[in-house]
Length: 186
Image 1: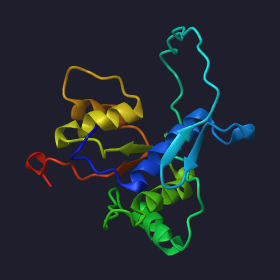
Image 2 (image 1 turned 180 degrees about the horizontal axis):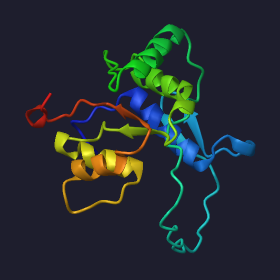
Image 3 (image 1 turned 90 degrees about the vertical axis):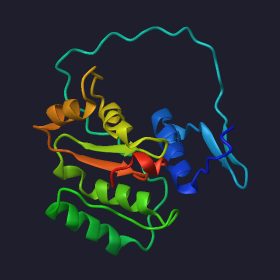
């Protein structure tokens, strides 16, 4: 379908984990998605047609959610020292970057470190996947969407800064390399 696109196994695992979490896969014996080794994933739940009704709008002063950090479905092995280093650096710096070749577990380390810090951020820990972005100019909009900030006609970066000004939260940006390098300002 996308001939020039390569899907990293780690990114796929993160997104399938997010879908499983949203569906409640594994809770109370419910199974929705199963792994098919060497082939991918299968949706195995019973599918029924129901009439969709629009939910009522939430009250305007809704309490802040605690975040959207994906759940790690497997135990992290052999990364305790790296995770502790990330946690330590996050307590000392406002920006921490984890770098390395694809597939070595950067996302897993970031999520595990964020889980350890969950009590330190009153306004939650937010995971923003940027792997699908092709233009760096879309990053503020992607972050705003993940945080649930209503879109505005103005500058999304200004709206994001204004909304987050009084918040104490952690934002985990995953896959920060945009594909169209000419638009990057790094």
